[in-house]
Amino acid sequence: MENNKLREQDFLVASISQLSISGSSSPPVVARFRSESLQFGSESDSSDSVQFDLHNCQLFKLGPFQSLCISEASELSNEKIYSRGVTIQFRNEEESSAFHCAFEQWKKEVVVQGWCYDIFVGCIMADVVAPHYLSFKILAAFFTRPSVKEYQERSFGFGSSLQNGIVSSSASKFDDKIEASSAKMYFHYYGQLLHQQNMLQDYVRTGSYYAAVLENRIDFIDRVVVDVGAGSGILSLFAAQAGAKHVYAVEASEMADYARKLIAGNPSLGQRITVIKGKVEEVELPEKADILISEPMGTLLVNERMLESYIIARDRFLVPNGKMFPTIGRIHMAPFSDEYLYIEIANKALFWQQQNYYGVNLTPLHGTAFQGYFSQPVVDAFDPRLLVAPAISHVIDFTSANEEELYEIDIPLRFVSSVGTRVHGLACWFDVLFNGSTVQRWLTTAPGAPTTHWYQLRCVLSQPIYVMPGQEITGQLRMVAHKAQSYTLHLTLSAKMWGPGAEQGGILQTSSGKLDLKEPYYRMSQPQAYPMSQDQQPHQLLQTQASNPLGSKFIMPCLVQLACGLLFSIINAPKSVNMYAA
Ligand SMILES: C[S@@+](CC[C@H](N)C(=O)[O-])C[C@H]1O[C@@H](n2cnc3c(N)ncnc32)[C@H](O)[C@@H]1O
Picture 1 (cartoon, rainbow, N blue to C red):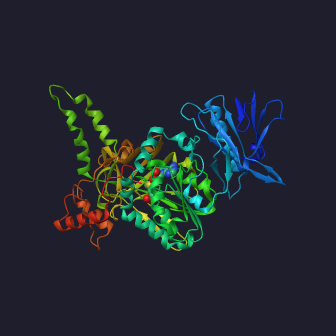
Picture 2 (cartoon, rainbow, N blue to C red; picture 1 turned 120 degrees about the vertical axis):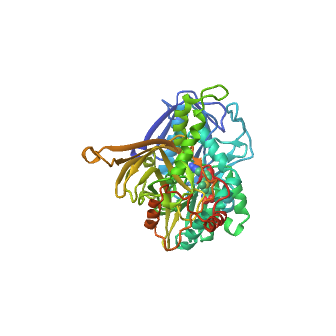
Picture 3 (cartoon, rainbow, N blue to C red; picture 1 turned 30 degrees about the vertical axis):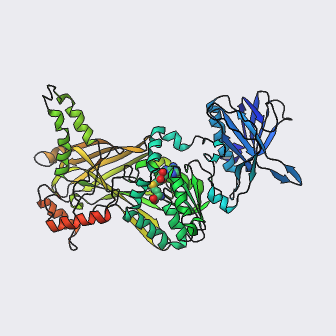
């Protein structure tokens, strides 16, 4: 927002009361944002107004209609100004939210880098009247500059704890676009050590991050780092190992407490790490970052919608031209043929074809059940020989993408089939690049590469399409974000008919499907044995598949291959399915 737009902004509030003075000012009271100050006073008479310097005041929500504004004690031209506080009573929740929003924007405008104060609750007490669920005592709230150690021990910003109660955080972009129930489940999930362990045990993932950071020490030495969604704090510890000056590890779930414990147990690194409990959309940091590190990738890269948080963190915390690890992400897509998978899914609905299930005809629900099974994207590790055309990719540059671009992603599809076969849908995977100054490293989840806990994803169409070698397959993948931190996928694949009459009419076979990325079918029960001999090239594999009418991995593996594959899975694959797979 432009500064001159912010220069004048007034809010009517129900009343204010100063902490040091009993009684409250009579309405109507106006809160005025002026240049670098926030003034409270009666609408007509400005003589009794209370003024706060926006540089050194903070706003806390006490309840839906009540907030607390506190300013730091300071000394200005030998005049001592004591810390002051007012409680503000709003007329309704909307006005309270609007005021908080404006406050954040104004602060952003006026607060320069190097913000480093924090609130301490003093020991002299007086009553602050708060709504039923929040009744606590504060009187002399005073500010002090915390020492480095205090920084390490405490968390910052909205949502941080006061000693006598929890201050609820103000509404944020995250809360606006994500359903509260989804967010609650999500952060509950990541708050558990077993799920963090699952990610840590994905050695392809964690090893790639470790290598990317340590090989690019030059990007971390003496730099300020923000770890976006720090989880256990592992990436912060890597950044500290690489010589970071200071790392701010921001984590919204209860895992932040475990991260603190882990970091405290590694004191030589931990002294340069501050864990901040809160959402990256909401917390305030004392300084800007030179580099962001994060692992925000979900199934198909975008599931969980955490990339949006990564981009918001970039806009809030990163210096201009700062680095991002990872830097870009690519979604790769190719059509595949897998009769076994298709039959497996179609057969799941057979149950509903029973006409006499305890005397009940189930067939009216068969169609719905059939479509329902095909609306689940399949997550497993598949044999790259199932692909029938070279993959195409869609790039997301984390350093320049807008958050809104991720709300709806449209990818036009165009492939040339290498074989004649039935196409059952679209196979997808992703990779990310760490564009380090020393080494560029990719972390890939491609089929045939060492398996990660993301596996790969396939969208299976209920109606396969037939293609000839060299035939064009066109279509579209449209991904629409939804409030449950995931996406609805709309897939269409088309190919011209061949055979008698096709040349004249150019008739298209088209098949479409709507899938929910939030409800995948995890299909990891079979041993996945897909070793390729060293001299076997992908196009040879496609030819092999073409001569195999079913084009499937399940026919060919010999016992040795199976044993290799099993061993490979045991060494590489994570131990359990990650519901969010980030
Ligand atoms: C995939 S995990 C990665 C954890 C850790 N960085 C690692 O690599 O092992 C993502 C973490 O980000 C956290 N997270 C997701 N969205 C967040 C947000 N908006 N603000 C803060 N933390 C968030 C989750 O709670 C979760 O712990």
